Length: 89
Image (tube, rainbow, N blue to C red):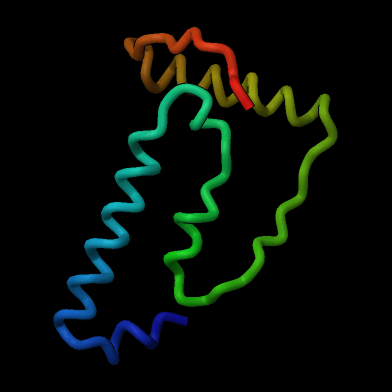
């Protein structure tokens, strides 16, 4: 799947690493409501360009997952400031 990496010259490898690092930083630096979204622009950096076959849970299960995610943030980042802004579509 990643055979293309072995064929890249140094300049192409450096460019690839820089692009991946930038995308990871963008994802890492997400905050507030942006934490709730999937990140197709991150996935687009993979060489295999496929349409992700996502499955969306029904609302009750989805909302329980959101609550569980928020609870995990409470455990993993207890000192994080809160972001009280309403979501603005």
